[in-house]
Amino acid sequence: MNIAVVLPTYNESENIEKMVMALLSLNIPQIKLLIVDDNSPDGTGQIADELAKEYPQQIEVMHRIGERGLGSAYITGFTHVLQTNVEAIVQMDCDFSHSPRYLPKMLDLLSSNDVVVGSRYVKGGRLDEHWGLGRKLLSIFANSIYAKILLGLQVKDVTAGFKIWRRNTLIGIGLPRVRSNGYVFQVEMAYLTEKLEYKVHETPIYFEDRRIGRSKMSQKIKLEAVWRTIQVGQRHRKLTHTDRYS
Image: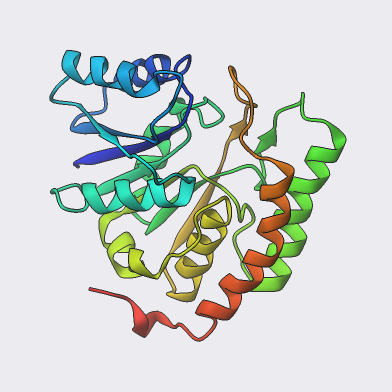
């Protein structure tokens, strides 16, 4: 199976090499990495270029100038790898909150599912024990109450960013449909997946807080996510499985 890992980066100079080596050390055959860097001022893009020179058959780097945002970075990366013969697409963060050690199991599960989600909120999943109570309650509210009730989602980890997609699932969702560019990107992708009736499997993970650097989840982003989630429901509420792209 040809596998592409899409890694968006912004100021991950202290993590990028460690993450790349962790992924390559899994010895998963036919795995390739696409690093999508948003013009990081800390030199992440230059480090990525050096890694690509060292591993030219396995690493490719895209440099985005001007445009920034997690959602658009993933859309750019997904669109690019779908132009190749890739069969499975991994989305994950570069800060080790998504551990590469889960990938072999998740790839096995993909054989009987359309998308596999690394989930914090199924049995066996855990949040970092160093998270404060307020942060934990906000995450639980966003996933288990607000987005689930508002959108009627079945998936337990609505904002999960650690997933493996089948090629045809991403094609069927239709990436041009996706308009969210912040963390609501995860919510919109989860909603589209269920509205189009794709088979989702959640597997438990331990969600570790980022090892190095600061979180990019500001208070402004959190507040923006509230009303943008409402927009997602309004935009896609009439979709059914017959609206899949082919």
